[in-house]
Image (cartoon, rainbow, N blue to C red; front, side):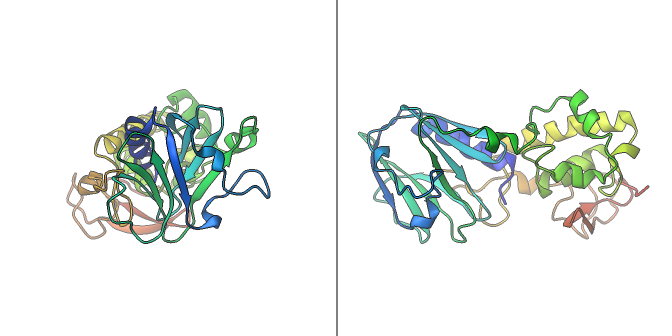
Length: 274
C-alpha cells in the first residue's frame, strides 16, 4: 500500500500539473469507484466546468479542492494509480475515472485493479471533521516532544508507528527503515526505549520520509508517479525487503520477523531485542 512518501510524490506532481485547470469532461467507468459522501447521490456532472484550485495531502489521502468549495478525496488503496497523460495515450485496463481539461491536451486518470481505493466527493458544506479526526498528527511534521508523549505507552514500538490514529502516514516500509536508523528493535515497548533513543527515532522518522520523498517514493509492485515512472527509494532501502542480505552497517544478515502483525526487517546486531 502506498505510504506517505508515495502519496506526497503524487500530490506534488498533480498540484504542479492540474492546479488551475478547468474540468471539461468527466467519465466514470465503474460506479462503485465513485464513493459519494452523500448517500444515494450519483456521479456529479457538476464537476464539469469546475476549476481545480489545489491538490494537497492529509495522511495517506489525496485531496483535490475545487473552485466552488467542493472537494474530491482520492485513496489509492493497494493498487491505485493516478496518471496525467495525453488523451490519445492507450487507456490501461482498470482505469475507472478520467478527467479531461479545457484547453489542455491532457487528462487525469485514476486506475485501480483491485478497487480497494476509490474517489469520494464532498459537496460544498459537507462536514469532514469526523474523517479528519480519525487520524493522528502527520508523521512528516510530528514534533519530537509530541512523539515522546506517544512513547509513554506500553506497546511495541512498531505497532505504535503503524497506528494511524496515533501517527498518520507511516507504513511498513518506512517504519522498518526509521527503526533501523535509530537502532531500535520493532518489538521493544515504546515506554522502555531510553529518551535519547526516542528522540533519535522521532528525527529518524522525519529524515527517512523526506529522503524517500526526494527519491519519488518506493515502487515494489504497483506504485508509479503521475508520469508513469517508478519511484527510486527502493534501490536504497537499508533493511526493508533485504532478508538474508548483509547489513549496510555491520554486514550481519538481515532477518525478517513478525511485528505488529506484519513482516518486519531488522539487523539483529544493530537492533538487538531487549
